[in-house]
Image (cartoon, rainbow over all chains, first blue to last red):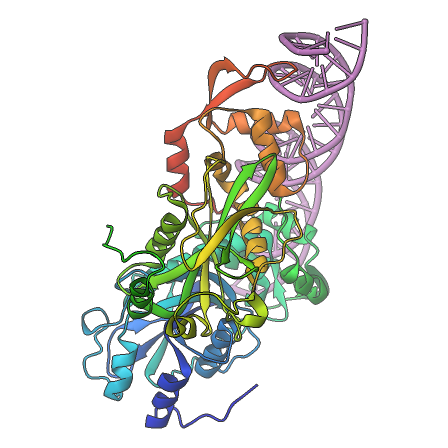
Length: 259
Length: 259
DNA sequence: TCAAAAGTGTTATAAATACACCCATGC
DNA sequence: GCATGGGTGTATTTATAACACTTTTGA
């Protein structure tokens, strides 16, 4: 699956992108994590720029868009077991990165690559969620300075990336209903109240404790471990695991088409 | 909004496409209609070919993908008031039109255009629905021979177009729940049993008459006209109109993000 | 013993579902 | 009359929502 790659950020790596990628088409990933009781997403900066964008990249001529999303995510986060959900494409007629909308005046990349990347681009957007909230985002060239930003924060991203993040959050909230997407967020072992907090972070509002518990247990995605989380200062909550089998089948099965 | 266009199918029109369109990126539209009590979709053929595809086209450098979808649809169906729903992108690594997967051996188009269009393409897919089931599809060059195909039929389209149609049908069924997309299908005046038949055609199964009636009336999208449909051979069903105001606002408002 | 958070149960309401029954028409 | 499809009502079940009560811990 892997190809020999030139050193990241080298002239050769830029040439490879320009020579072997589909022109004017990109993928972007909104990578969520649940950390510090908040829903966050990954943002990176172009080297030498102050504006932030979400990770993204280009599509090699011989790879599918889904593979391109996976690859770019791997190159930038070192994670390769994420489940990616394509949720939309963005292609307004003047959608391009420029000095005025991204502050990319003096970033250290070759001019021919810069000309290439400053064309009008259509992007296909994916969202993904990481289970380990301590994952480091590795910002490869032409990016640097990765950050996690609060979804409720006021950060303004370059271009239409804030819009893309907003749409990703909506897609995530929508998918919560039909699939337990949320389970990808959680560590191997977790409590129902923790799961509820995550739900609330995604939905942007609070839900009833008792009702949440009933619903999530009835779904059959959770398995009781018999253990409890200790030293919480209050009554120790019970620890659960994911019913992996049930979870994986739910990802491929069709959403119920009810009337 | 309209630009002067070269004669369709002329050398100039092909040159314009190659010169002014984004490369390797297309839009495709699954146009549904409800006709003869069946759900159908529009298919066209390349001139000189036997294989069918769904309508589609290319994106001018200075137009948005949504505008491109609208324009191509207009050029091919003469309809310009359709509501388009983007539902996904398709981009497997070997997604291209070839003689083997589309039977385009001897279609009468210039070789440079043919080389251009036989590149690997990613397509962004939309679905749309027409309210007048008697709409004629105008197949412009390089297409000819437009047809309406049954969604339940066994027709095999070229490339991955059957897959795209299947996904469109799923998206349509999903959207039925949150929006009364269905109303675009209906003529100005219709009966509830007719509306029910349409629902059943989309969902692929039957629904309870009484319950359907209750639900659709409670939604507030229908207005009673006071008239009945005559000469049906049985009890004359009541005719309804769409509450246009309510319908249009529902199209722009967010889907409820319930828990 | 008290606060705080976890876990459980009860009730009210609304929605989905399954039918049963009557109605209006053409034959 | 009667077959056929349209229109209406009702009972059952299920889902949603609001909220009260109990349990377990650390301080």
